[in-house]
Structures are given as C-alpha cells and as structure tokens.
Image 1 (tube, rainbow, N blue to C red):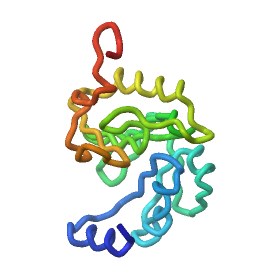
Image 2: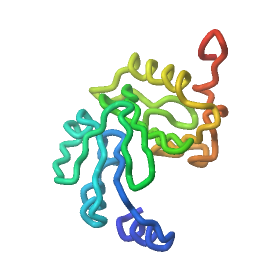
Image 3: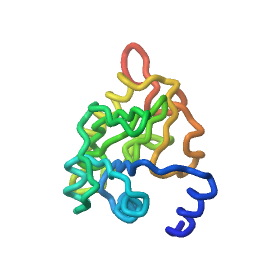
Length: 168
C-alpha cells in the first residue's frame, strides 16, 4: 500500500491521527514515520535503542521507556519493552489491545534473524506477556500471515497459553 492509499484510507475513515507509534527500527516499520509525523504534525514514539538502529532523526521524536505511560489526548498508552526480535522492541498496550510489531505474531513468537536479535530475550518477553497480559487482550501484530490481525485474543495464541506449571 502506497502513501496515497494510506492517506485516503485515513481520510475515508475520518480518523484524527494524534501520534505515530513505532515498535522497532526495521525499515518496514519506520519508512513512513517521518512523513506521517510531519503531514499530521504529530509526535513519533519509539524506544531509544530502536531510534538509534533505525537512524531516525526527527524533531517530533519522543523516546519511550518500559511501562512509563504515554498520554495522547485522553488515551493512555502503556509501552512495554519486548526485546528479542530486535534490541529495544516496544509493544503498546492500549485499552485491552496489544500492538506487538514483530515480537509476537498470532501464529507464535517473532523471529530472531537480526544482528541485535536474542532468542533468550524473546523467551523472556514471551514469559512476561504470560505474566502481565490478560487473556482477553486482542493482539495486533505488525504483520498477519495466516490469521486476520486483531481477530485472535491472547487466550487463543498458542504461545501465550499457560498453566500453573508455566508455558505449554
């Protein structure tokens, strides 16, 4: 989808863009962030590590910290450090919805193919999700491969189902 289609979709849906949330520094997640920030005159929220790896320099950048809430108008956004796919990945918890970028897909955890990837950190992140994310939470990954994005709750995710003895 090109920029014209994106802007048209936003306009047709009568959306009022207030911020750009970046989950990690890969080009497919940041390539239009500066343009959208300038076009809508809104801040870009990103972790310091992702900012550095993405080499983003924009006057509207706000670096987020783990579990330090962001307030955009009346919307409370809770950034969660979810390293593993890359160093400095951030997922955003917003009113029972979790935007995970490439840390967690509906089908399972993200991949570790980058030089800053860490399977151990990704495992720690998955355990953290099990501990703090309610099972009713809707998951919105950065990509949908085999399932409709947002159509599955954490309870239905095969990587987040747990028992008293831990992950299944």
